Image (cartoon, rainbow over all chains, first blue to last red; front, side):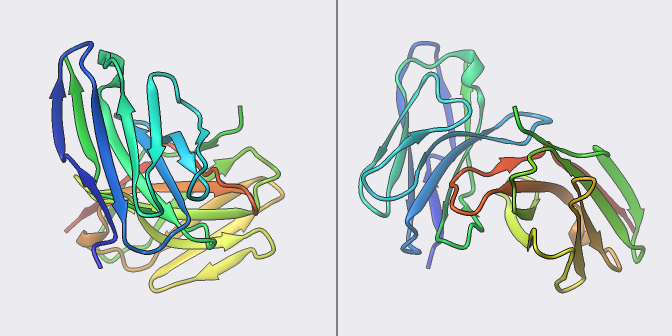
Length: 111
Length: 112
């Protein structure tokens, strides 16, 4: 039981490049989330998927798109990376108990 | 917008002492509160939660107190250990909702 896994762990992009962050969970959770964490700040919700087949915007969705590929997988795409998107990205999942289980994070730098 | 914040950004305690981390929340509709611990280089990890129909809940060496009158949440860690050194986040959400709002975090340093 791996919990929540994220790939890649580290990534450096140039401004304008695109990439997809991958997330998978093996806990059969219905809901999945993408957050970003900037220095000295808490986690800010980018997008979430309450259940397979649905996605909704969070607090800071601009510049991102998501896909809930199936119940296990929830990906985050940056179409045209900007330096303001330099951050640590966390994926999380939960069942109806509201406690969220987080992945180890992806550290993204955009130059 | 609604927010969850913390009173102290850093806290330094002696090993063996008790730690108290405070948090203020502003959304009166929130009815579920969670404390997470984040160690360096890792994702946040659930510590303890409390629902709004309670004012205290105890776990192993941790206690969460909820004061709905002043919208205040605290995390108490008994006999703080070096392994407790981390950033602690409070978070709030509402029953039936899918969004959780996180505070900025408090860094706890435990001195040996």
